[in-house]
Every structure is written in structure tokens, then in C-alpha cells.
Amino acid sequence: MVEQAHRKRQVAGSRPASGSRNTEPASFYMQKEEIQKRISEIETAMNAPDFWNVPAKAQAMIKELQDLKDAAEGAGKYDKGNAIMMLVAGAGGDDAEDFAHMLLEMYRKFSEKKGWGMRVLHQNENDHGGFRNVTVEIEGKHAYGMLKNEYGVHRLVRISPFNASQKRQTSFVLVEVLPVIEKIGSFEIPESELEITFARSSGPGGQNVNKRETAVRVVHKPTGISAHADGERTQGSNKEKALAIVKAKLFHLLEAQRKETIGELSTNMSKIEWGSQIRSYVLHPYKLVKDHRTGVEVHDAEKVLEGNIETFLEAEKSNN
Image 1 (cartoon, rainbow, N blue to C red):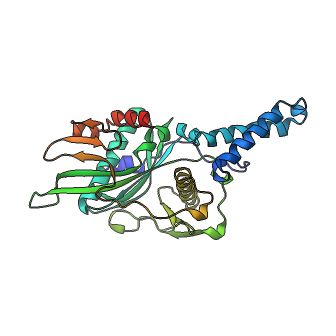
Image 2: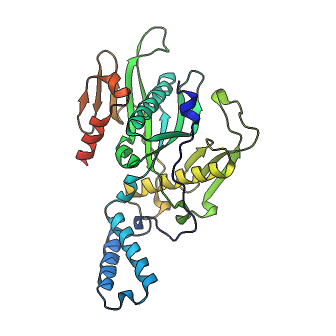
Image 3: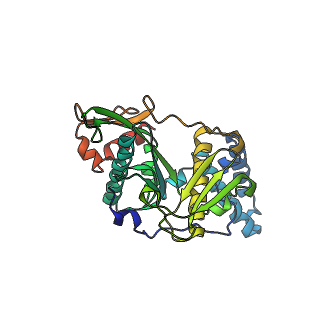
């Protein structure tokens, strides 16, 4: 079971700024051809002798140019920031929920080695310490850039500790990794597209642990994207976190699928089951962790689950 100290500790981290101009990646609003056209326009304007006649306008255009270049490069500016990680148990029942706990511990130990912090934003825990789903924020320099390629389905093969017949069990967990987008207020989603509900925070087994309705669930109705946050002490803070996660999910889908508008996004998610995995962790009948994207194999599976995942991260980085 993830220790209570790790679940509840608060790690100091950056907070979203408010009241700023639109600084979200231009790829939210523009196609690649339009981005390149606008870059050329600004660069031409910068060569004009009167470019600095209005300093405020000039600075705004320079900032716009940098945002456009970041978008053209795939919004890589988020690589240096924090990450939101969600683990969702799939096929495998109790074993899958236990596997979600194992992966959370793996990422926690890796984060500790990097000097990063991890705090729980939401957790849905079963009666024996496994997780149906859990959401954490990983706070550290380049956390998102280093972990973003962990996004995908992970597969575990082992002798099930929950099966009296000692049968081999295969289970699956979806790992989602999203950037923490600073200045989230600058990317506005119309209120009409959001469904926001409040509830009391819950502990293991579903019992209420807070008399006030501090837990928040946000649903983006056009896409079905949702997020739940109850790790903060106030309703306002949890709403802010849930909105940030929804916006990060929209960002990820827009970047990955290169869609023109949010309304075109599909809500279909790959099934969390056989054939969709990016990495397999085999503990029986032999020991092996294999990444199916790069072909990298590590035979010391226990070492990997202790947080030693650098080999896979470096291989996937080189593969992209």
C-alpha cells in the first residue's frame, strides 16, 4: 500500500498565473501552414526600421513569435515543467488494481531519485491497497519531458496473489501523462461546455472523510473528457486542479491528433487490454520487462519496478 505520508504530503510547486494574455500554443487555434505564414509576417515586420516605435506592440509580437515557433516544434516548451500522471486499472480485476499501485510506486521511487516531488490529486482505492484509478502531480524540472513517453497501456504477467489456485494472471493499466500548463486561465473553455459537480472527499472503501463538499469533478461535454480532484483542502483549489487536468487532456489530444477544433475530437480511447500495450512486465515464468516500441529489454524486472526506468526513457527519447 502506498504509505499515507506519500499520499497526503504537500509539495511546494508553481501555481497558475491569472490575468495574463493568451499565451497558449498557437496550435490550439491555427494550422501548420498558418503558423509558418504568421512567423514570416512577424520576422518581416521585425526588420522594418519603425518596428520599435511602439515598444509594447513590438514586445507582444516577439512573444507571439516565440509561441508560434514553440507550436511549430510540437509545443516542446512544456517539456521542462511538471507532469500530471493518471493510472487507470483495466482488464485484470484485483490484479490490475494492484498493478496500478505497483506502477505508482515505480514512478514515485524514480521521482525521488530525480529529486522531484509527487502529490496525490485524486485516488480511488480498493480495500487491499490497489487503485482503480489515481491521479498525481509530479513536480520537478523536466518532469513532463522525461515522462511523457510513458503514456500508454502497461501489461503485467505474474502468479496472482489474489488467486488461491496460484494461476498466472495478465493485467493491464493505462498510464496517462499530461503537461501542467501554466497560466491555464488564458486558455478559456466556454462555461456552456463544462459540467462541474461537487461532492465530499472519499477515502478507501468510499467512506466520506470530509464533511464539506470539497471534491470536484469537471466534464468537458463536447468530448466527454473529465477530471476529478479531491487532494486539496478547498473546493476552489480542487476545481482549479480539475480544470487544469481537463485542459491538459485537450492539449494532448489536439497535439497528438492534430485536429482543427475541439469539437472534432473523438472520445474513443484504446481498450486497456491485450494487444494495446506499450510495455510488458513479466514476473513469471521468467523475469523480463520489454518495451514494445523500441524493443529494449531488461531482465531484472524487480529493479525496474524499484524505479530504475532510465533505460526505457532514453531509448524512447532516441526513437522519437
